[in-house]
Length: 330
Ligand code: UDP
Image: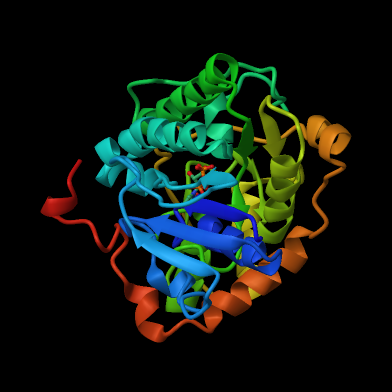
């Protein structure tokens, strides 16, 4: 009998790639999403499959899944600073109440659960690169606080279910990841720059562009998550690509890649924008035998191909979550 897995946030960027991976591995996959930031087009190719089911449901509310469940991957959450500003309370709720519901379900079903945590738990880090033993430098009441603190609470709740209830849990701390199916207008640096290049607009670099990030291609990330789920390691594991670059240099790479003749314009740096970020992946190497394989130049080519081939109207879709309206408020 096939293993059965629930993936929350299934219609999102990472959730949809995880659905693909577990379908390929022969699992029965249940995808769940409330479609606030997710998009059905990311999983429409899976809908006809008999080993894929989709539940349109908000995980912040009680989750009912009939039958057995072997694994739960909790990936539902808005994940860009623009989203946190537009939907701060659903962001807090999905990381806290949504995690609680998933953990309760894991306990009831005897399922192993992996949560998507984030490098944002390190905040604007004072340690570089960031390893898992660093506790972070987070502003709880700043614009990113709704995401960062929900994710920190999520880790605490997950460890408590492990130690108190004996639930098998795994925690991945995901660093900046990119690839096909990112929302073109979610405000993140990569889709912002590629979208601007494709629309013939100037490339907006925030601050002086000296802040750094380390971008991981989605296929590498999915492999790391898969290995962590199958491991017996319960403490947090960083998964990311340590190849660090300044945002100004990153913008120049996108200009070279797209061949745009637009110029870079500097805009004010958003509040609490981390100055530097780079994962220390020693733990992932030791425990999972994992490290990224896809270089930024390779990954960016694949990603640009995807964005270039999107329907033209997608380039102009409004920047905040499409499904968000008064009825979906908190
Ligand atoms: N950024 C930028 N221009 C944009 C969008 C983002 O310069 O149009 C910067 C942003 O201020 C941050 C970096 O790019 O320093 C990465 O931003 P992203 O939202 O992708 O990720 P995060 O800040 O959450 O790591």
